[in-house]
Image (cartoon, rainbow, N blue to C red; front, top):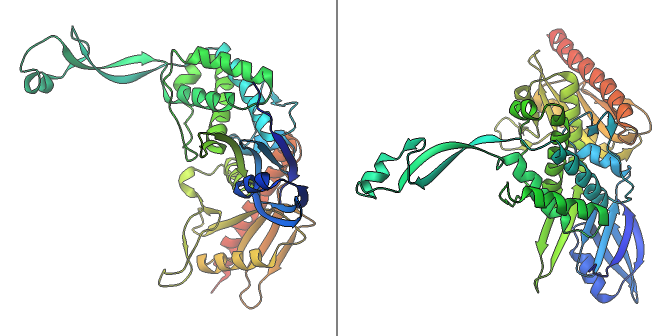
Amino acid sequence: MKQDRRILGPFPEHTTTNVCLTAEEAELVRSSRLIASLARLGHQRYQLRTRHYVGTEVLPSLEIRVEPKLPVDRLMHLLSAYPEGLRLGGNTLGTQQDHSLDALQAIFAGALERSLAHGLPRDYQPRREDLRRVQGRLDWHYLHTVCYGRFPPLRCSFEEQTYDIESNRRLLAAARLLAGHYGSTDARRSLRTSINKLDPLVRTVRYGPTVRPVEHSPLVARQLGRGAPTYFTALELSQVVLRQATIEFQPGGLSTLAFLVDMNKAFERFLSRSLRSELGVAQKYWRDEPTVFINARGSVRARPDILWKHPSGLPVVIDAKWKVSKAGEAQDVKQMALYCAALGVQEGMLVYGEIEGRTTHRIRHCGIRVHIESLDVTGSVDQIQQATEILAGRVRSMAASNATSRRMTP
């Protein structure tokens, strides 16, 4: 039976709103990670300010929703591992849901159902069991030191082909997490059906928000054939679920489900993946949030968002800013100028979510130039791809200009 909850929101990110709350609801709102501050204005009247997090937090008697500036399907695109987006049959996955947790539940339920219709991949996994006959390699040490030469059973090490592999475990873990959310009835029914199919084949593993991505195995592509893209889409969505969705246990045995997205990190990671893919740079030459030493002793450090080890020998430094700016914020420009000076380059780039116009800030006396660019992620997948291509071209030009400046320096 669905539990009655008051829905608070949806509120836009980074905004201030006046709301009416009871004292109990105010305590719940203060504990939410979506809310930056809550100030009392009068009897049951409060002013809340949202943070740069977006998503849905389901509390015992309250559901808080904070929506991003972009549509929900574009948010899913930002969170996907593919720069070209999540596609099935050439069409970007869409949903009729109007907020992030319901949308993620509906999208993942459909993707998982289509993936299971094509079958699951299998792989050989190492096993060690006590058997009545030899299979694989016999553990002679165990037989002599523990069993004193008495057999059966015989302890054997062998490999067995099984569905219980890491990628399938993540599908099951994400399905279990989302099946507990009161969203779309059809999506919950679909998830339960998928769980019933996976349960006998895959063991349940609980993952944390720091789960690392699973590489796309060529074995999966060979086994599933045309069904491989569908499976990889479901796998990428499962990793979005496991990174962003959490279940927390509150006092009294109550649990809360939260789907929280740090928009600063989401934009930064999407920018990094998209640019690296468009520029064709190998992973070993592309670093996210590297440590840069500011002073000669190395006691002052900083962490720019992106650092490309260019073949010219001069690094290319880029910072992502999920905010709206006219021509770059003063603090951001000073920070980028500091990065450039520490790295010994003449040019750096700030990429905003939205700006009024491109510009370049020239720092006095040292000649450092800070380029202000934007990457609009509110359009269609094709429009985002075109904008990424243009931005990648400007990054190439900046890298070439850095190399030219170095040659001209006496």
